[in-house]
Length: 425
Image (cartoon, rainbow, N blue to C red):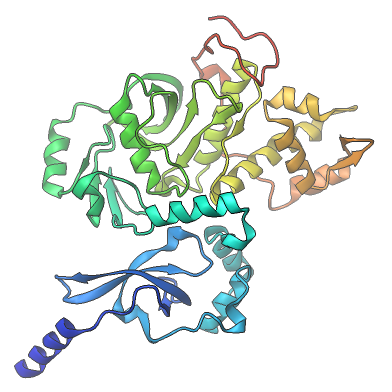
């Protein structure tokens, strides 16, 4: 027995790594076998075997992961086969498992696995930038973080400095966002950390929900740490260190222990493009609980007080697009349901602070707008509005902003998206 064990050990030590850049069938955590590219290989000293960082072809990079050799088929996969040539067929990719999925499973699968555009589908400038971005952020070393009571699997690369960025797990203080390489350092920090809430001013409190306004020019380190944390779950945001031109609005759940970070959005103090959100994130443990739409609603509540229209900075993540489209649809349908008489797109924009462009695209998705005599005209019937309200896509937000609980005055400033005179303090 001992001899056999020794042989197995020596075989694993002598195992030859798979070729980086080649494609193999890899078993996902869902047990689906999908073609994936080997991005990088490393030897795991504890397990005495190679691990491989893989990218599943055609799928969002948030699914990129380190996998052991046992989840990879032995033979290379020929990506030139006809069945794999089209990148817009996620169901074909799943057929390799010969498993049937329900309609609901497919919907959830498609929501989670946003199918990326190929370089050929992009304009040359976008394709070049995308290639550069992917080269810089190709390998995600931090697999998990511990923040508060949650251990969270990460989605993307984040440029944590030095050796912190090469750890498989980081421990992060949920109050000050200090990050630690070792669990012992983390617990020692928690015993000394005096913070129990974000820095800045609490501008909203309703029940256990609290929102803080944090000026990055006054709390630079905290906001930099927040951006590094957020980048683990956002692909295309590049704001890490130049945070001073931004305000951060930080959503927390409050209990006897303190204010626990749920999510946030950032906003330029002066946006030349009229954006009311630069970056928005709900941490994974709090997703699908209504907090994303609450953050969106809060950004528009601030825009209303500023008497400006606003729109989120593009590009939005795939999950961001879903949240915004759902929020815009609900706001517009809620108005149209009770509205009597004629209403224009400009009227809706002034009522909601949503840009006319975003209103038009949302109404088009519901077949509620026509292009007539050089302009977009709302074309709805009570029956059509009622059908959309009764549909599965229409969901009233779990949380709405109570303006009576908002303690905030807009700063005096000029804005491109101005609707009227800004309020004075």
